[in-house]
Image (cartoon, rainbow, N blue to C red; front, side):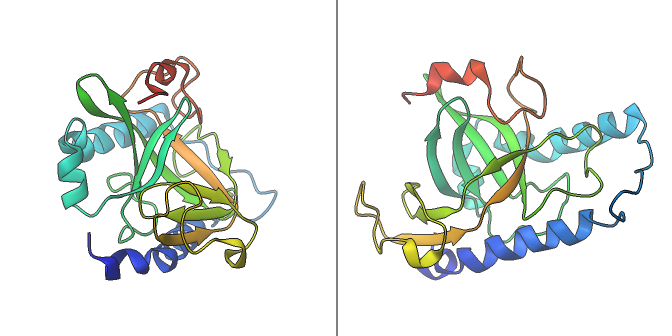
Amino acid sequence: MSTKRWTAAAVAVVAIVAAVSISTAGAQPGAKAAKASPSTLVAQLAAARIATAKYVSNLGLAKESGYGIITRMIPNMGYHYMNPKVAGFNIKKPPILVYEHTAGGYQLGALEWVFTSKPATPPIPGAKYGSFGAGCHYKDGTYVPAAAQSGCPTTSPQTGSAFNFWHPLLITLHVWLWYPNPSGLFASTNPLAAAFNQG
C-alpha cells in the first residue's frame, strides 16, 4: 500500500462513517421502522457471501483490493482490515474485513460496518450493534485509545510504527458470515475466535 493512500485514511474513515450514517438515518426519531421480511435478511446475506467469497482464505487478494490492517488481533474478534475507498452502506462491499489467524493461515470470519451514531433504521434486518472507542491507529495495526487526534503519539508506543489515522467513538455492526458464532450473527465478539487470540 502506498504511504499517500494510507495517509488519507483518516479522511476516508470519516467519509465512510458519514456516508453510512446518512444512508441509514432516514427514519424520524421515534418513528416505527417498516418490518423487513426474513427473506430480506437471507437475500442480503447471500449477496454478501457471493461478493466476499474470494476473500475467505485469501488475505493477499483482500490487500490487493485495498484492504489494509487497522487492528491486530482483538480478543475474541480478530484482525481488522479496512478499505478506505469503500463508503456508504453496501452489503456487497463491507469497508472492514475481520480475519482469524488459524494454523492454516488467515480465514475471514466477519464483515463489519461502522457508524458515527446508531442508525435510525437497521441496514440489515435484526441488526445489533457494538462500539469501538475513539483512538489512534498505526500502520502496523497497533492502536492507542485517545479522545482526540491531538492525543495520538506520532509513532506507536508499542512498536514505533508510523501514525495512520484517528477516529471518534464508533458504533459497529459485525456480521459473522464466514465463521460460526454461538453468540449470534451480529455479536461483536465470538467465543470460538478465542482459540486464535494468541495468533
